Image (cartoon, rainbow over all chains, first blue to last red; front, top):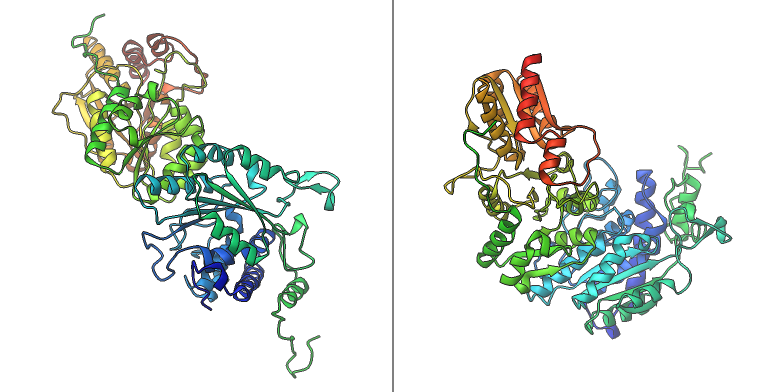
Length: 303
Length: 318
């Protein structure tokens, strides 16, 4: 599939982007099930965001991952690495089959992104709050050296926005007028375990409604809000985000944690959890990739 | 007791920092100065005057500053970090570990205000475990120059070195050990005094004081050699084994905790390469406090007289 990077919104094949997002989810579930490890809820909530980034917004060359003039992308919410790996594989950075090495010893697809192992990663992440600082450094360095072709994208989690470093970067970036810095917050409203309260599963969201928008705005950022599962809206908002007005941009992408698998949606305990065989079959069926029916030696239904 | 050869006082390393990095930046457009709002203290202000467009105020936000430095390094730029050891090493340690050391990004962590000479600031600013911390990080190399002459050379080396490095600088003027023709060789220790009775192994601005201690010991008939370890990581194994073979009596002296610092590092190397009894002079597991420099050196056993006293006691007991 070739959606074509940086094509004007009007000509974008939205169905193709939806299919990429679906494939990301399928590969996430497959890889996490295979590894018996890894995160699920976050990679599922970020699927459309990554699809639109890698198949529309980012100017990158998968066959030349070190292309100096490329846009940079940092997954600050590094625990959602398998979603990024799936998007990169589908975009052609490496074979999709390699996704099954996720989390394995000697794999290029480490539990958290390791830029020393996998070409195409613009920063190592995993310790929350750091990716946005590195992305700011890229935006600042590009601006100082006149490399205006480089845009610096970074994806954060909403739970991650509890880290103080996020707000250090949020304070500093507007001072340098870095409108080549585009942050996206995967606002799925569920962190790993959450604060006790009267919400679903006895937990309340990491922020109050509207809190993230108000905070980023107060720090001097241009704030855009979008349905993070609507690929058309994501295309439009990212096209708008890269049209700089002197301020760094943050896109608050409202998402559903575990999106795409009904029994995973909205539950904190699917942040990271081993998938049972029947859950795996149900998830793959919901994602449109039903497993072949198991058969016994005679070709009849397995018992 | 008077010194046979008292050393002259050199210029403060922090001034060398501002001047030398400014000079390097004049020749290399990739060099930037990232300051955590202490440029008037670390003398990054000297750099700012020379290169206002390449002085980057990062505010009082050191975690972000180290992350920004990592991002800039991926574009081929060379950021130098201006803040105190406490805020350049300990506070943003996780950022250094994940964003700089492990991915081996070309960031120069060059804080002033190492050791005890921090302007009577007390326990929050006096960091005596920075070498132990930094040498434990993957890919990180650690240099502690002895004086202003070597600080200049070490900074020039750091700018040319392709990778993360830690250069430990001092706020106040300290004794000048080296002549202008001194050569700094990364990874090499150097004898600054020959002596056959005991080998004193020292690093950073403690080396000149250790040399002065050796002169005091000479007056008592103890012939102490002094090996200056400017590069704490990687250690010069050959020179350390040579010291052990020369005297069989090795004592480390450092303005730093002996837990994992030079003392720990030398003990590790010698236990593997030439089992030797190593005594360690330096800070023990003690709280530090504010006070005038000389008072602190005396309290924590790092003045020449106190070092000489401890060496005498060790030699008498062994």
